[in-house]
Image (cartoon, rainbow, N blue to C red; front, side, top):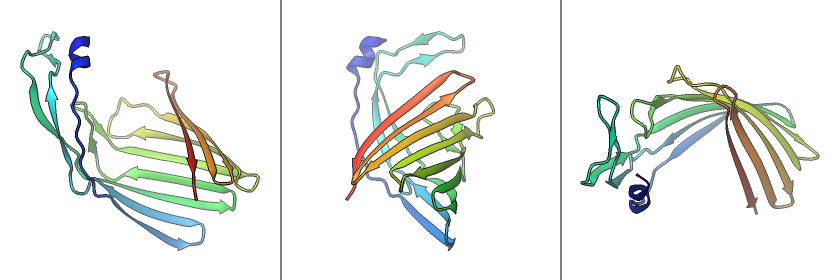
Length: 178
């Protein structure tokens, strides 16, 4: 199996059309909708794919399989509210169920969080949670983050943790904004 993974590689790219609209009904309240993959980009995939038969045995066919992965349009709506100058509360939701790359799995995520900025927006503290509402077996995943801004340099550290599965994710970003 490892040899087949190491020896199979597919590269392709395709432009995606995304669009969004933001509505500001009052100061401190933002409501938005975004559409991703509006042009349904597709990508060719060729390689050997592991197949599980009815009895649970896994095999890899000797002949490579060719197919395409199409990204269907996805739509998400969200709201952000600033009750204080340094506090933002937000929530967003997938408006439709989205197919994932794994068979028999769909994703429709609801998420919420807050951001507290301190020291004239030099330091940002973030906390939140999300859940895939399309999968009854999914767990609530908790998130946290820390942001630091020094002039045009932005450093962000973010993490997510599923307490039931004891799985963690982390990301770090460094950006210069001008």
